[in-house]
Image (cartoon, rainbow, N blue to C red; front, side):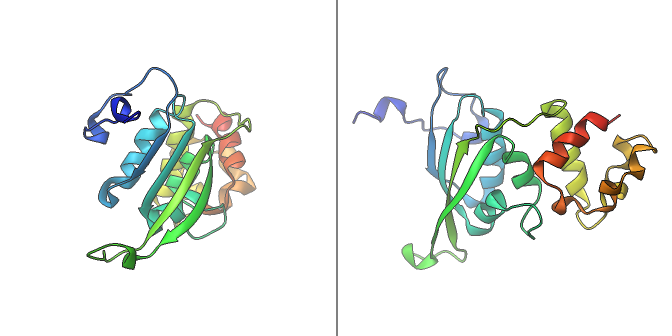
Length: 177
């Protein structure tokens, strides 16, 4: 009963930020839009210090993935500058009736206290999305439109995007055109 005035029954992707003060998001998110939901939460990062949610297992693993792992990609690289992400546990399909065809994972996102310096949110997002748009290419080939030719000679551009740390992506934003 105490939570009733704070429960919102609305399409998550269509709503504006619901509260002026900080708020926590807890949910069992629809698997078909869970990545979009995480990106929407990222837009509200200044007001959302904690998210606890059940997602399709692969989405939860991608969010929590570390650089160098196969699951590390756009989702993890965009969330992790702002949130520390813990993969809490698996939820097998047998926990549901009827059981879905996929497994689930529960993750907790806690706003990070570490400082990460980059040129701007816009530059960081553009770099990450462009780098992972052609995942199997080297950074040099995937982001060449964002950098001057002399910058592209740096060794870091011979690597694949999934091998770069969040800090390396952040540092590269200062070298962008």
